Image (cartoon, rainbow, N blue to C red; front, side, top):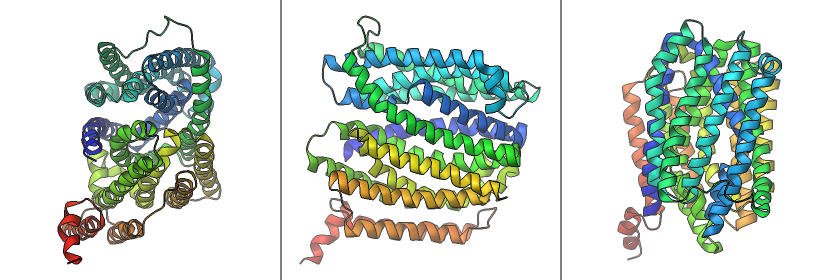
Length: 485
């Protein structure tokens, strides 16, 4: 548990720095360019993420898992094979974007300068592909300190570049938005490459031919990840594209703000300890050791998610004003539903990680397809029938409740993992905490100081009751022996 927390804190610092960097960027864009500017920026960013999934064959997880599950020279051989595959894919996609922009641009980006925007995105895709690969190398070898120092460069570049980029967009050059994706990715990739070379873990990519078994392993596992990744990021992009087409870029900006805040702070927590969780889990051969690690992470998420989600619910008006502007406060209508869904999302991800750690791609494929296409389809029907963006938040909540149920079934069937009674109690009481705070602040556009005291009291009660039930915690050791005397 100590290693989990130590790595979580380190990765959390880097993730928080990235969050702060993009928060500064979002603030400047929203103040200078308004909801419409945020809408275009969000749409481009989601398209960029989707293109990056295709360019890398969504292979970072396979790269990490493949390195972590091998030993000695086999690790370098696998990494070298993946490098060659991803290089060809990334350069090939960039060529398609450059040559096919006149046809693809107007269909992918609802903007008069769509052709130029798509061509510039090809450069960002190359930079992001490089970043994905070298960070995957460091992660596979569990070089946490080097990952942190590399990722800290990204937000520094974002902060340095955002003011001139916003100025360029304001005077009529929206293609400058793309530099917000390309420059940080290139900087992180260069630093991570320098670390991997110094550590002697960067493969001699073209010194030997691609190993057929490694290539087959990568393509087989990543093929499923590609399909699910395209479905996931594609569904997210489709949602924003659909909102922009039917409701305009201003509504798309509000939806993107809600979606971004929903994803960002959960990623801050899950990404911080997931960096340690997945490769460590992949290296465990004993079933009981696997279940023990899964249970530790489940309990950690049950302790952290109710506190974190309820805190964001309490301060959501301030967060929108701080990260964006008061002009985007209408996004709270959809955000309040998404925040309730975040509670279930954070818990379910812990149970979902073993699918990737143990290459259980059939489960991963179908659950991701159900979630992504189900959400995209439901949103399409909602907007087709004249629904508002608030309905999109309700859909988000409902689907993540279903996803948690699916992950519970998966963990039981494939790993014999069952919830303990007190863990289910933590799930219920945690959602009660989140639900009460949401009810108390449902229509608030400002933070009421009296509610802060209520939140603090509820959090103290919840964490105390939870830790009293957690074997190994200090409170458990202090009080449980006395009950038996």
